[in-house]
Length: 393
Image (tube, rainbow, N blue to C red; front, side, top):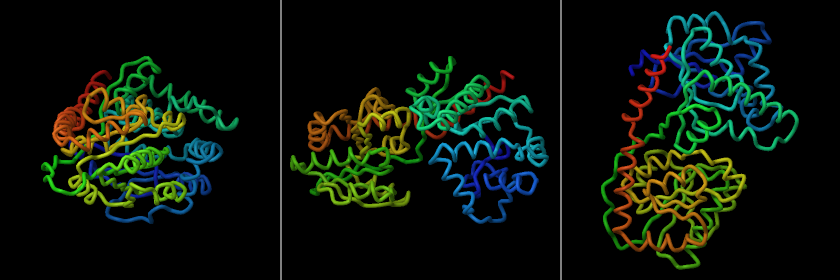
């Protein structure tokens, strides 16, 4: 799809960081708050030739607070309910662009869903909602307060309206199956894509096998990294285990900084990520086994999995079998997988000792990457979904 056929309406203060299109309209929390104070209208078309102050302090406080507490989330939804965002300028921008469909990145905020529904109704256009995180099922989790209970119920009510009006796309089969069941409609699946070009086979040397973890260690993933490090040390496994992460919360980092068998390497940029992947024999994906953590990531799918499968390096995964990422790797047999502590040592010994098995698994992974994580193929899948939905209206 050409740039001139895409426009983006977004709700954060920063300048857009995408080359998908050149037509942007921005309305931030601070814009809405300021418009209420001054009895004006919020937001405007973004001038890409001029730069704005990144991350206004008031805006950051409001947005960050909304992630932390029920009262902040309630306040944010209330702020947007004043409809100061629904301005002549926004209507003109929409009417000039003449959208045929709305592609909405599913969120856990009532206000953004209401905006989508209002625009779709006003201009009689279809909605395609893309879910990359499970906000809806998680909204049935135990509430921390009456206000939290109200927020979750309001969210479910509006999400139900949104899903009745929209086609939906899920990030993986696991989520699509659940959301199809919950919302009584069949969805589509489009996996995370990867731009990684398969690396040449690593030259065999006399050094230790190198296993690298790159990515997010929140949701207590660090506990599984420690399990692996302990298994390596206690059993004298000949492997160098490196962890690269941008995590900066001290209470998490303090747990892994001095663990024997685990080399903490800190944060690296994307070009360095590719270099590390190329120089590794094994790439690692982990999830934690705690009940709360499993629920939090049950339908998630790490972008690093797509990159790992595309890299021509063997992928090793350690985590519970009842989460989407592990199910995907098990069902498609494209990684070595350990789903409990009891089999961790056995699986590690196999992957470390047998180079041919690592090569064979990397070959299977590339086949899966070409099938599900190819950028062009997935763009075509999405375009077909959008065109089909437009054709129904």
